[in-house]
Image (tube, rainbow, N blue to C red; front, side, top):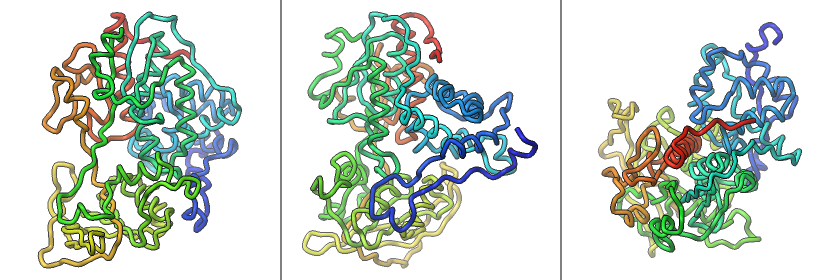
Length: 472
C-alpha cells in the first residue's frame, strides 16, 4: 500500500440521477467498477486481529477477500465470500454494514471505514457478469434428509450450509416465489428480484430442492414431514404478521400495513404497471407511519407509484430513527417530507375512505429501555395531515399459524420461538428455528447468522460431528 493511502476518504458509488429515478423502479445504487473497487480495497489496513470479522454475523474473512480485490483477483474474492456467505450479492446491497463490520473497522476511529459492503457487492456482481458460478466443494452424501420451512435469508443460509455438508435438503415455501422478505418486502430499487433469484439459483445448484405454495401447518404438517423421512427441520418463517396502532380509523379504505403494501408492489408486481395491473391504491398524498427501513421503502415506493406528496410520520427525531443513513438520504433527495416528533392519534375519513390523519406533536424525554429518548405527548398540540392513503410501517409480529400446530413448541410471551442460543434447537428434539421468528424483526445478515448456527446444530444432531468449514 502506498504511504497514507488508507487515509483517503472512501470511494463514492455512482447512483441513478435525480429526478429520473423517482419515475422508475430501477436500482438506485449502481455499484463500483473494478478500478474503483481496487482503489477502495487498497485502503484496508489488513489488521491482524481484524475487528471487522467479529462484527460480521456470518464470520466472513473480510481482510482476505478485500486483499484479493485489491490485487484484482475477484475469482478468489468470491470464493472467500462464499466460504461463509451464501448470499453475497444480497448482503452487499441491503445489510447495515455501518452498524456491523464497518462500525468496528480500524479506519472508522479517525475517518471513513472501508466500504466492505460495496466491495462484497462488486465481487458478487463480477461473478454474475462472468457467468462462471463458483461452487464450493461438497462433502459426500450423508443419507440424512432435512426440511427447511421458509426461503428467506435464514432458510436459504441453513439450506445451503447443510447441502454443502452432504445432506439432502428440501425448502418448503408458502408463496409462489422464493426469497421470503427479500422478495416481498424489499423494493426493486434497493434489491432487484433478479439478484434474489440469482442467489436462489446458487442454492439450487448446491443440490437443494424448492417446493412452493406449501403452507406448513396448513397444507402439510411438520409431523407429516417427519413421517415422510425427514430427520430434522428448520423453521425460518419470519415474522410477517402486520402491526397496527389501534387508533380510530384504521379500518378505512386506503389504510395498508406496510407488509401488504410492499407485497402488492414487489411480489405481485405493481411496480411493473401496466404490464401487471396489480390492485393497489395509488394515493395522491400518502402518509407513512414509522421510522425504519420498511417505512422508507414504503414512502419511496409511493413516490414511484405516482404520489404527489409523501410524508413520513415518526414519533421521535431524526437521530433516533433506526433506518439506514443511506436510505434516509435517498428519501430526502427524492422528496419525502419528514414529520418528526409526530404521533398519529386518529385516521379521518369521508365516505369510508381516508381523508386525513389527526396527529399530536411530541417532545423527547428521558431515555427508555432501547437507549433512545422517550417521546412524550405535547397536550393540546393536535393538527391534521391531509392524505388519502396511509401505510402503517410500525413493525411486525410472529405469525401463530405454524406454532399453533406444534403443542410441544415453547414460545415466549410475544409468540416467538424459544431456541438454544448456540444450536438453534427448539424445545422439540430435531426441530430448529432462526431469524425473525425467534428474534423479532432484525437484519438480513443476522437472520443468516441464525441459519448458519442452526445448520451446525442440525449437522451435530444428525452425525454427532461438528460441521466443517466450507472449502474454497
